[in-house]
Length: 287
Image (cartoon, rainbow, N blue to C red; front, side):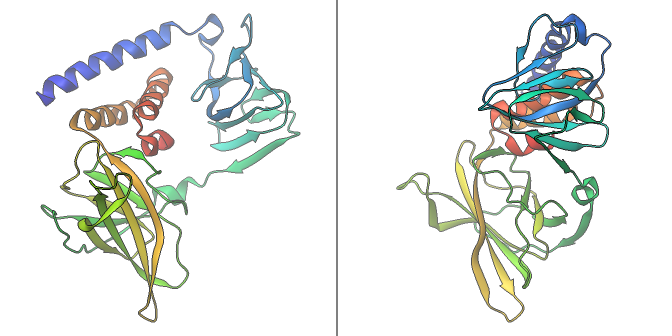
C-alpha cells in the first residue's frame, strides 16, 4: 500500500512540476533566477523583464536579474539571494531592481548574512532516558543550529525524525526534554499524567530519532528544563507544540525532501510550497 502511495505521489509531483515549468511566462525561459522570496506581506508586486504587467508577489516566487520589486506603503518583502545566500528585507515603499548581488538602490534595504557552517556542524551523540509509551531505542543527537526555538509552533512533523532547538543557557551543563500528549479533557493543553518521552541532552540542539508513539493529527507539547552547574534546574527554559503527521503526510514530506536534492528550480519551488501548504513549516523553512 505504501509503495502504491509513493508511486502515485511521484506521478502527481512530476505532473505538477511539468505544469509549473510550462506555465512560466516567456521572459523566464532561459533566464536564471538570482533569488527567492522567503517572506512577503501587504502590497508587493514583481515586474520581470519582458513581462507585460506587474505580478502579485507570493512566497517562493523566483526573482530574476532585472526584476522590478515594487513595495507599497503597507508592504514588506524578504529575498534570499543565491550567490552568497544573504537575505535582503525591504519594509519601505519604492521600486528596486534585482541583480545577482542584491537589490538596487539599497536605501531602505536591511541585509543579513546566513552562516551555513553553523547549520551543518554535527556534534557527538548523547544518551537518552526511558519514557512511558516509548518503544525501541531512541537517540538524542546534538546538531548545531541557530539559537531559535524549533520545531516551529503547531508545525506538522515526522515523528521518526524530529529536531529540537532552543536558546543556549549560559549556566547549563545539560538539558532535559519532556514531551507530553494533548489532554483529552482540555484540548490545546498538555496532560500531566502521560509523558510520551523524556531525555537528557548535553547540547541546546538535539535530534530525536527512533520509533515514537505519536498519534497522527494529535497535538504534542514539549518543554526543556536547564540543569545548572550547581545542580539546580530552571524549569521551562523553552517550550513549544507540534502536530504529528499521518503516514500519508510523512510520505509527502519524504517525497518533497527527495525533490529538494534536485537542481531543477521548478521542483525546488514546488517542494517548498507543498511542504508549507501541508503545515510542515520546519522543512519548508529549510527548503
